[in-house]
Image (cartoon, rainbow, N blue to C red; front, top):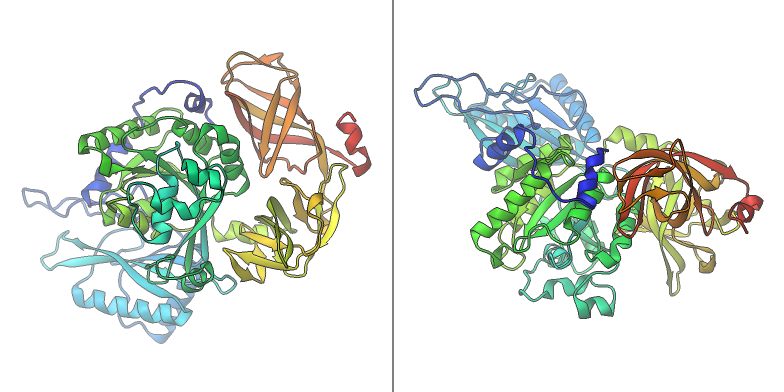
Length: 602
């Protein structure tokens, strides 16, 4: 991580020149002439004003891995060829974890040749047969005319193929919602999930609040989850069509789970916990058009960069501002994104075609940052955001998930409830392995460093029953009559065979993002590592006596309250007031259960 990210936490923004490709990319997205592939895919008009043919338009060459497939044409294939094409589609769907994009009329080297209308119709018919064979559905995303050296109109067609994997109920994507207080985060989620526009006074957000004081103040102070579904044809499924979450899950082939985080600085620790613990696939940073980058906006942006969470930006409340004000806010965002600490390439989305391109480029390049402008009152721009979310593919590939599933079970405990007639229930994310109903696991560490045996009675995902939980999925687990008093946030539930190690002392390589004076031995900070959140004291700074803003060092920390389960290599974030730093765990001093209290100094 570039130490200049510290500017987003404590320093002032310096407008930067940004990458040279930023303006070109934005122009391609806004002008409707972008290619259908990755961010390098330039597409030029077939002829210039003088009538002379330009160089042929290209996309990046087809990659063997990934979920994008190029096909020149699929006209009347033989039976052998058809079976081969079906096998190829299965591979692309597996790579995209249930989603694949076919570019019809494109050669393997990326040349946009295009097809005549009759050939395109026959190719789409064959693609439909292939999809039926594997149990998938297809949706035409967009069509483009290619006029390169041809007198007859020729088109390329981009098609989304979607199939829920046999071992899953639906495709799942977790999106953390960030932004300053009063920027309209909960209102936007209310509009998306309830299917009704806001009245301008916050009516849409009322169903999202969990506490009375949130309703009274209109400000989120806790973490809440909302779901938005898409069926196999790309149509929105929300509470306007279905009464319960179970019905939404049953009707959807793709589910977006929004993690609504707090915007007020007083609840920053809750926001950090949501980002580190719930492992979002990406983040939505909401910025109010009438206030611009204000309050905690810069800090939330810095958190997403520090934790390497891909993010896109939504400029809200455009109905309250003049067009010039909205444009000024967008320009302000572009300057911040291009500065040295960010190195992002902004891409303004103004049409449905832009939204398709943005979704694909966002998944392929971590530097692309789409920017949407919308209103939760008038509905302006909402459809573009829905198109983007529908097409946005999973940001982790199938190989990574398969490797995680081969490991032993590890479930992070983030929430603890007591449900009448059910008993103790824990919520969290399965970091690795597979968890089934009836599994025997151990949970810990307790204050004395022990792990306790328990049994998983039942599992629910998105408020509907689930028999099997796989790595990377979030869920709630019912533990029956297990004593809730023995549990706390930050614990892990693991397979007994894992023989988990715990520690009270650990070392981490850190970058001090911001500190008003000097960072010394004895300084106490709140440490966030995954779902672990605890106060720790700095015991030693290797090779240095003190640190200043922007400096790096290996630091030894000691937890003050109880031991924790940590892994070497885990991302770390610490804070105390305006002091903030990031890093990763480099070493843990494992201790036995009986040594836990002594290691804490008791």
